[in-house]
Every structure is written in C-alpha cells, then in structure tokens.
Image (tube, rainbow, N blue to C red; front, side, top):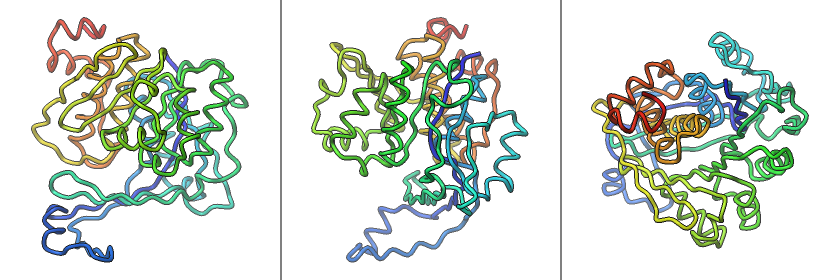
Length: 324
C-alpha cells in the first residue's frame, strides 16, 4: 500500500445554498461598495479543509494518507473521532490547546455551481506544526501533497520534503493571491507536479512572472482543471493535452470537487498510470464528490472505482490505466 503525506487545512466548514445565480443578483443589484446580502435556503456544518478532503479521497482509494495539520480544541469534539472511526491515521494532526477552533471555511454556492468562499485559518497558523523530517513514518512516504495554506508554511514544508528527496504535488489553490513572486518561483522549482484550476493558472503566471515554458521546466508537469470543460495537461517539450470532463447526470454539490480530483490524480500517479490516465482518475473522483452533498460524504472501494472507470472510459483506456 502506497503512503502519501498530505499537508493542508483541516476545517469545520459552513456550506450554504443560494436559490438563484450570482450573475442575476449582480445584474439586479450592481455592486458599488461591495455590500452584498444573500438570503440562503440552506446552511449546514461540514467536515472539510483542502488537506483533509484530499486525504479522505486517497483513503477511499486504498492509499495510506497521512494528513499533516494543526487544529483547534473543537477538533476533538466530533472531527477527530469521526476520522479515527473510518480508519484515517491522524497521528500528525496536532491539537493546539491555545486555539479554540480549527480552520473554518464558509462556502456559498448558487444554482449554477458558482461559489463565494471565505476562509479563516484558525489553528492552522499555529507554530506547533512539525516539519516532515521529524515525523514517524516519513521514510515510507512516496509522495507529498502541499494543499493550500499560508505561503510561509508551504515553503518550509516544500524545502523539507525536497531535502528528503520526496516528490511534491504543489496545489496553491485559493491561497495563491497571498504568494509573492519569489515564493511561487521557489515552490514551483521544488515541485514535480503543479495542480491549479483555470483561474489560478492565470494568477500563477501573473504573480510569478513566469511563462508556461519557465513554469514547466524539464522535470515538471502542470495540470489545469477547467470544471465541466475538462483538464489540460502540460509537459516540457510537448503539446498540451486535453482530457474531457465526465458528464454528471445528477450534480448535487460542487464543493470539494477540486480536492477529490487531486486525490484521484495522485492515486493514478502512484499506480504509474501516466499523466492522462491519472487525470481521468481525478475526473472520476470529482464526479463521485459532485454527486453528494459536502466534501467527505462520497464512498467507494478501489474495486468499485475501477469498475466505474471501465464503464465510463471503456476497456482500452481502463487497460492503459491498469484498472482492467
């Protein structure tokens, strides 16, 4: 069984649903001084955090995922016991007694799947976070995922993983606007894979001041997710490749689909499936998430995942992915 270390937030989220679309709201009520009032039809608490969402998906796929984070005291109320009950290893999640709360995300979705997101780091900024080289089991880790966090934290972790010669998947996500050019250039240089969505792809180039060619480098691959428009894959010296999205007949909740994609993508990398097959696995994991409310409510086994992959992509592509 492969082992992946996932560094990132562990959050107790608030998820709301707006019964309309933000574009229509803006047309009716032009934003002048950013005074927005949305009446929601639903608001619920959810187990989340980008790091933990990715670890959860990997756990579903039979990967030993070691989440790394610092959390507040409320983690012990429900979140920690729930993770232990499903078999997730939480030995590297540190509870800082000086913080009452874990990180908290507030995500409001409209009927078209658009989202407004705000985030509070909570205990995520605690100085108690250990570095990877000090952690038990680090010698078994084959790949490290750096999920969105404070830039200084992500850079410290990346430097440490690089010193251990552990390949890095860099996922700056919604924290991208907090980075400066030097941090991004260094983090990209230390990473084997960079995964961003289409909006973040433009931001990454603009903030880093680097071209696509410079961001790629000879040993690096970049994955750009584009929602229902699929995924673009960039490799040094090659034409960009495109993978179509999987049609979801009954979409329920887009929250966390990007994290589920990353879990499926990393699963493919660990199987040696190749970049295109790994992206297809990511797309399938994202659909599982899209079909359920919240971010850690979908369930499957590696066998049922392989069966659905075969049904969606056919025997030839399933064989290429070593899933048939």
